[in-house]
Length: 296
Image (cartoon, rainbow, N blue to C red):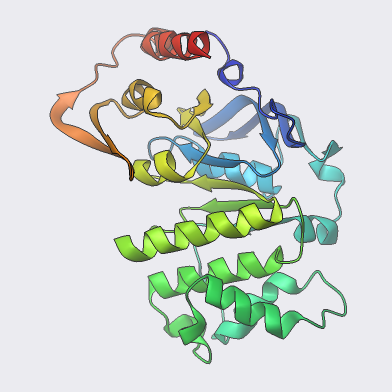
């Protein structure tokens, strides 16, 4: 099988290479992830897609150094991630986990300010906290206790914390796990646009674990598709990737497209057969990858 990394080498148009994963594996009992080979350039937006339990969050945690690989190496700015000090790493990358629990009834402003703890003599902290809350459309939650907020409100406050953490950094790394899962459609679109503008203005790379295919197709440059602990595709987020998505999720999809963007809808009652060995199941996917490469 052709490695997924062959579909996209990253940093091919003069961008600065930020993060590299080389031959990375991790064994977590029932889930074994890898080997993973990935490249991420500064300023790129990448969505990680895959079925539940495929290893998406595990991949994100490896990039965040919340997990250590059992084999291989993760490099950030050509330095092994393991060699970064905790304070230097906290200034350079910010992580929004899937769970937002805080053990105590902290004020909203303090939760956001926690993103700034790695910065000494931070005279702009109060101002940045206010601006980050505004970016996350959570300024109306000031003065509230975090543990009294709804799930969607907590998610916005935690997003503000992440933005505050890398507010005055350049070419940083934003790692977010289902950042908009508890949002209504209008708020989802507004916050996605806010994250895009924030990252673009500072040159930050944005990597997001998503289940929403429409967000992935419309707001991200590239897709990393993960299934059964394997990276099965690394490709541009374009309509041609629909056959890959069908293989990834085992269901037929319908693509709707106009001047406003794309929408991918499942076709009810029409499953993609995935019988046979893992390698056999990947053959249509790899054929599509080769066809995409030939058109470039």
